[in-house]
Length: 200
Image (cartoon, rainbow, N blue to C red):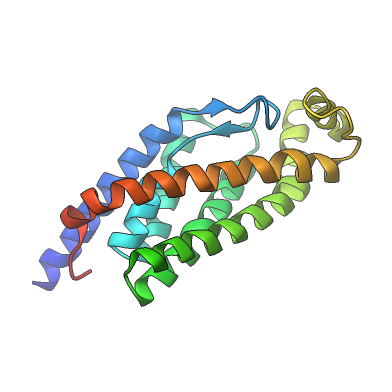
C-alpha cells in the first residue's frame, strides 16, 4: 500500500508539473500595468492545486519541476538567476497557502492561505525584482537600470527610480497575478481535487 501511495504521489506530481509547464509557455504581457518583459501566466494554478490536494511539499516539488523543465525548453539569458528567482517567488505563494489549508481543509482556509501566500509573494517579488531579477536581466542584455525605468515611464510618466518602478509596476502586476490564479484555482479545485486526493 505504501509503495502504491508513493507511485500515485509521483504520477500526480508529474501530471500537474506537465500542465504547469504548458501553461507557463502561454505567457502574455499586461502592457497597461508593467513593461512588456513582465508576462502573465497561469502556471501556478496546477501548482496550487497540487499543494492543496496532495500537500505543500508536493506543491514545492511541482514548482521546481516546472521551472527546471521550462529552463530546458526555453533556455536562459540570466545564467539561471531568473529561473531561481521565479522558483522562490512561486514557492513564496504556494507554500504558505498549502500549509494553512492543510491545517483545516475548508474553503475559508483556502482563501486565507491564498491571501497570506499572495501577500508574501508580492512583497518578496518586489525585493527580488529590485535586487536580483532586474540587475540580472540588465547584465544579460547589456542594459543599465535606467533603461528599465525608462520602459516603466512609458506607462507611468512620473516614475523616475527603480523603487517607484517596483512599487507602481511590479507590485500591481503580481497582485493581479495572485488574484487571477486564486480565482481560477478556487473555481477548478472542487472539480479536480476528488481525482487527486489520497492519503499522501
